[in-house]
Length: 184
Image 1 (cartoon, rainbow, N blue to C red):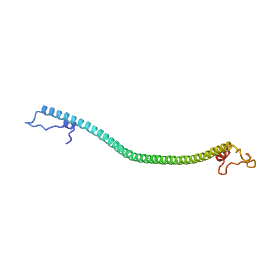
Image 2: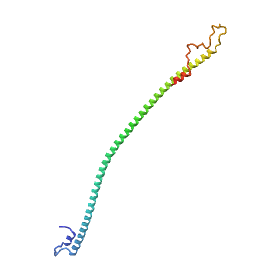
Image 3: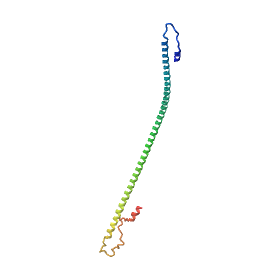
Image 4: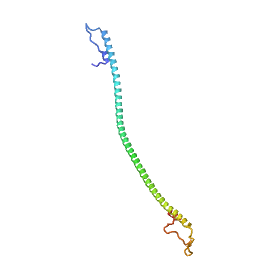
């Protein structure tokens, strides 16, 4: 039997001599019909809500699946970015090491060049000192030689002409022209 409110209201009972009070039974049947109608409305409402919730749950599940897919993509992208960043930092580090090595090499070359220039200048200074001392010595010897008085008691044949006198052979003569030639 289908318990719809309309069916309940249409139910009729046979009459018997000792039966129930007809008005009470009709009143009870009307209450039952209204309760069933209320329950059916509540059931329809709950079914609609249930369908709406199922639809929302389905939408949320799809949204969660999309988020999980996006999350996986983001994780992959993050790993790729990490690897790229790691490689880039290694590349920058290697470039910095190369630049550092190049700077050190250049500094060592410059140092060697300065040391060579210093040694060369030191040698030139040493040669200059020797030549200058020699020049001064030659000058001093020349002054000493020219200041010697001629011997007075020497015979005329023994007297020498000052223009014929030559400086001693062991004196090395240097001039400023020699220095200028060496600098060229």
